[in-house]
Amino acid sequence: MPRIVSFVLVAALLAPLVGATQDAPPSFLGEPDAPRIAALRNAEITDVKKGKGGRSLGFQITLADGTRGYFKPKQTFSAAHWYSEVAAYYLDRELRLGRVPPTTGRKLDWSILAKAAGTDDRVDELGIAPDGTIKGAFIWWIPEPLKRLRMGRKWERWIRIQKTLPITPYQRPVDYRADLNRRPGVREATDPSRPLAKNPDTAERPAELSDLILFDYLTQNVDRWGGDFTNVRTRGLGGPLIYLDNGAGFWLGEQRLGLMEARLKALQRFRRATIEAVRALDVGALAERMRSDPLAPVLNDKQLDGLRQRRQAVLDHVEALIARYGEAPVLPW
Ligand SMILES: Nc1ncnc2c1ncn2[C@@H]1O[C@H](COP(=O)(O)OP(=O)(O)O)[C@@H](O)[C@H]1O
Ligand SMILES: [Mg+2]
Image 1 (spheres, rainbow, N blue to C red):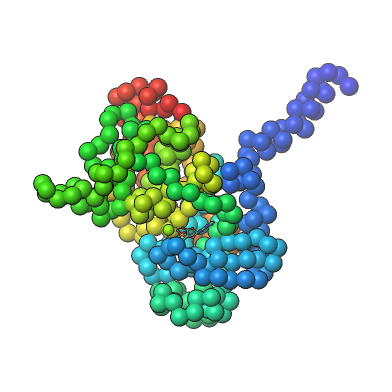
Image 2: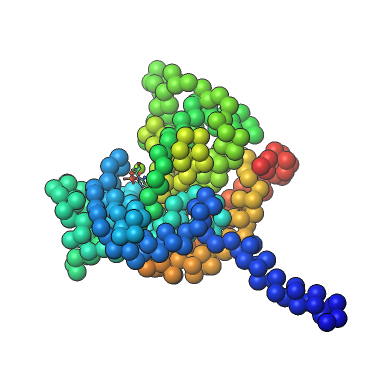
């Protein structure tokens, strides 16, 4: 075979492989999603326990193949949006962050959950349909202990070029507002006796936190901060940062909340690959992917349009920072 023909042949054979590596299958911290998603969608339920530790009513479920998951059903409590959990998963994979545990929409018969719920008051808040089914986000259960990352006061300097802000937006909405309107003599919501942040516990931590803030801005998740860092957790002590509890996002009303804008503005240092992924994010393609979810479409047109607006706001913010400080300090990672 002439050399040029064999070269073309080899190149043609390799092309799909190269494509496959560039287009790596969705995974959570490098572990492929496919078998977990398949189990969460289809496997039979063998055990149900009521969840602990959250405001919303959730269920810890074991499936026939041994896979475990946390089911967060549709409920009226304002910060518990099952669709936000599901959309956060698809967005995370679209951006190739791999920090949200595998998640799918699933509809269950309420009769499967009723016994575990017992007489819990929050049953009244659940969105059980007239046909006795209930929709929800089914999230793969992370087996390792999830450790709170308590960074200490003024950790924000890790993710800023300028010095820390007098009032951090990375706290509960009520505490942030209280601090903004604080009169002299009234105590700060951020306990001033708390230890000051030292160096990050791992070299990657500042970049991981930057990604998290950016991600929460895109999903419009207002509920990451406060509560003694209960929603800022690592997979095992000193392990990678994960994004758990993404239910308080994708609001149906205002698409650019003041507090979230403040959280974006305070963020001044970014991972280059993440900004490239945001630039490459095609919200239409994301919507198309979400159409494969059992509870599609997951987000409505207004929510998708809000995401488009926030994507653009991130890119504008980064561009303005680069114009002011140059690329090196803005994209250090
Ligand atoms: N996928 C999961 N893997 C491991 N633990 C989980 C998972 N989902 C929830 N949990 C545990 O259940 C608690 C409550 O879940 P969370 O999503 O925070 O609910 P809420 O929205 O009610 O706050 C979490 O703090 C965590 O301890
Ligand atoms: Mg929680």
